[in-house]
Length: 305
Image (cartoon, rainbow, N blue to C red; front, side, top):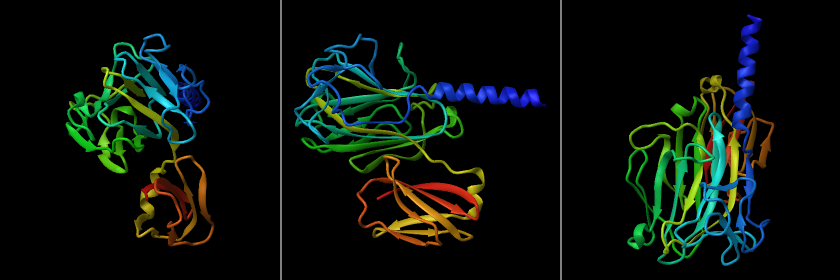
């Protein structure tokens, strides 16, 4: 019996090691040399060797935060990859901002494994103004429910948020996606291709320059490992609702502790007394994790303000 537990522990450690290739990170694109290709930390490429015409470029034309961003230029060859570490369990979320000038195109897809060989499309293609024929309109052509159409603003920064629930393993993973604060992939959508094929892992995001009309900028990346609920949490009867900036909380027993975290993982609210509501009117719009303790059982819920 002890040998069995020891082997299970070794297996768990091996999985943790596999999943820890890329830790949560923030990237405001300010630390890179202006005008130079970026091939370090979580930035790589799809086997094109880095350098100009392959890697994302540090650029100062537009910036969401600070003075520079990452540019995917209209060269038809740049194939930059954001490595997310081949995640196979837990809950993950990424937020970043995108800027597409008037009439220009953008593109990315989600890959199941990094480094990328022949390619393993989980979701995508994700087009913005595909072939220059639909400015301000995007489409996802390979995902559950595809084609999925959405809109985005030209000539201004807009936010993209993706979240993955891989608690039950990658083959049963679900996800959601929002563009410009509008949900385009519903919560709990299977994280598969349109035909239902699951990925090897959550590998990375491929940002590609498909032709000379492609030009888009990326900034303010946040990639986090989110909190997750215990199996016993459902029995607490916990419910939450956000209306008119008031977060209302209910449970079968007293809620003894509440903590609220932003997408940076920073605690923005804490209460150690029984609380049934929190005024969030002063909080910035965005996604938050509400973590509670109910009679010794801890769990969490995600809310969007």
